[in-house]
Amino acid sequence: QVQLTDSGGGSVQAGGSLRLACQASGAIDNLNMGWFRQAPGKDRTRVVIQTWTGGATYYANSVRGRFTMTRDNDNNMVYLQMNNLKPEDTAVYYCVGQRLGVDAYDYWGQGTQVTVSS
Image 1: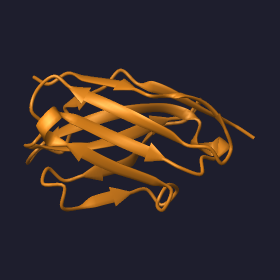
Image 2: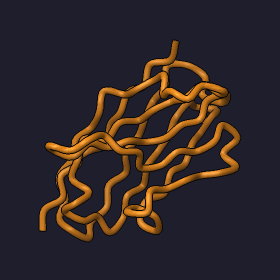
Image 3: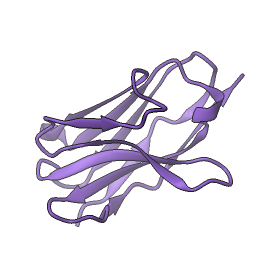
Image 4: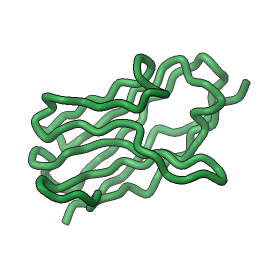
């Protein structure tokens, strides 16, 4: 069992940047890792997922070119660098982990709030 702890959210103006961090309690080198977000009144949606090797990263169209996910397997950390933020990026962001060969996302962080004002 891996526990994920999200941090780094905050309030910024449009065009600003934030860096989210996710600390895992155990090894993540055998997990696909990513981020989801949930805006008020909307369904939770996937922002990015990265394969366990780090060899492939898939971004949602709405964030591609602005967000960058990285991982540090040695320290069990995952990061989401968010640049050129827009008001529509306002949401609670969740770090997720997925075991190989499993469709469901097994591990979820508690979420961190990102608020972007115009």
